[in-house]
Image (cartoon, rainbow, N blue to C red):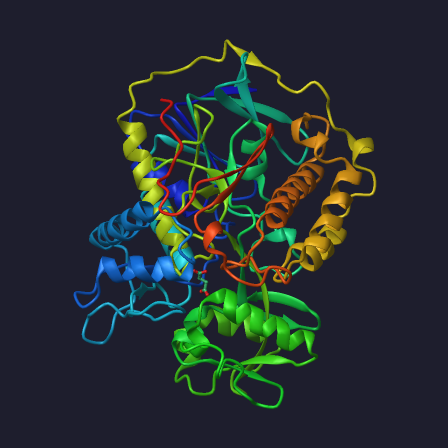
Length: 532
Ligand code: SIN
C-alpha cells in the first residue's frame, strides 16, 4: 500500500508531536512510529524542562551553563536561540493549560539540576514530566494528523539522481513493506542508547534516524559525543532504569560502600557536577571494586516528590526508607546526529531531522540536564514555522529510484549479536576510550560487513535484523569519530589523549557515505543548509 501526505514524521516523541501540532491544518500529516505513540524516551522522561521563566534568572545564564557543560563545542548562536525560544515555548505551553508543579503559594516550583547555576527546571507530575507533556500534546492533536503505529521506517525513497528525499519505506513486524511519499520527511527517532549494555533508553532506541539519513547520503556529525547518565538503578549486575538528576538537585549524594562521599574534592559543584565528570568518577570507583549508592536520607517526602522513582525502586526491591539506592552509569543521550541547519533541514533536500536524532549544535560535547525536552519543543515549533511558510508544493512519486543494488539478507548477517555489540561498545567506545580499543572494535565491525552495509538495501531483512544493522551502523560512526578525535572533551574521554586541546575546540567530525571530514574551528556558525 502506498500513501501520500504533505509531511511525514518518523518517530512519536516530544519533538515529533510538537511539530505535528504546530503544522498548519491544511497539511495532511502522517506520524509513523515503530511501536506505540506512548512508548518513547520522551514519554518516560523523568527529568524536567530547563527554561528561564523566573524573573531572577536570565537567558544569558542559561546559555553560559549550556556552553560550559558542553565544553564550548556548540554553535553558540543556536544555544542562544534555544534558551530564548525555549522560554517562549514553555510559556506557550503553560498559557495553553499545561499544568506544571507549583509551590503552595502558586509560584512555579523550579528544580535545580547538575551544572545549572539557577533553579530553572520545571516539572509536571513530579518525575513524570515526559508523560504529562506527551499527553498534553496528544489531547490537542488536530484531525489533520494521522498516527500510524507499529511500522518502522528503514529507508528513504530518493529521486532518480539520488539527490532528493521523496518518502520512506516502512516495515511492520509481519514483514509487510509500505511506501509513504511526501515533499517533507522528518526524522525524529531519538538516539541510539541501546548500543550499550547499560542504558536509560527504551529498548526501541536503535539509532534508526541516523542510519536512515546516513544511508540516504546525509551528513552526520559529532557522533563521538555520547552522554552517560551517572545514576541508573543498578541491581544484580544490570541497570533497571533512571534515577533522575533531580534527586541530587533535591539533596541526594553519592556515597561508596564505606559511606564516603564520592564527589568531595572532585569538583566544586560536588554531586551537581556535569554528568561526564560524575559518570567518570562512578565508573572509576566501580572499576576499583567499590559499590556506589545514592544517599537520599536527607530528602524529605521522597515518595511524594519522586513517585516514578519510588515505584521503580519498589519493583526492584530497593527500600526507599533505608535511603541508599545502588547506582551505576549508563548511556543516556547522543549529542551528535544528523547535521541540520537552524530550521531542521539536513543536507538532503526534502529530509529534515529534529530532537535527539539531529545534530543542531545546541548540546556541544555534553548536554546540560533538562535541555533535551526543551530542544524538542523548540525545534518542533521552529520546523513547523518553516514548513508552514514553505512554497515548494507537493512533489509526486514519479521520479523514484530504488537506490540500492545489493540487498542484505539473513545470510549477510551471520553471527550478529546485539549483546556482543553492546559488550564491545562499552569496552571500546564507552565512558573511557583508547585508540587501540577503538581500532580493534572498528576492525571487528568491518569483518562483520561494514561499511558495505551502509549502502545496501534492507527489504529482505526482518524488523529485528534491521534494528541490529542500524545499531551496528551507529556503532561504526561513533567509534570512527571517537578514534579521530584525539583529545578528551565533555562526554568523549580518551585515556591516551587525556586533555582538552584548544585546536580541537569547535572542530567537527562530519561523516557521509562518501567519506569523513574534519571541519570547522572555534566560533563556527552552523555551516549547512540552504537548499530549499
Ligand atoms: C534526569 O532526570 O536526570 C534526566 C533528564 C535529562 O537528561 O535531562
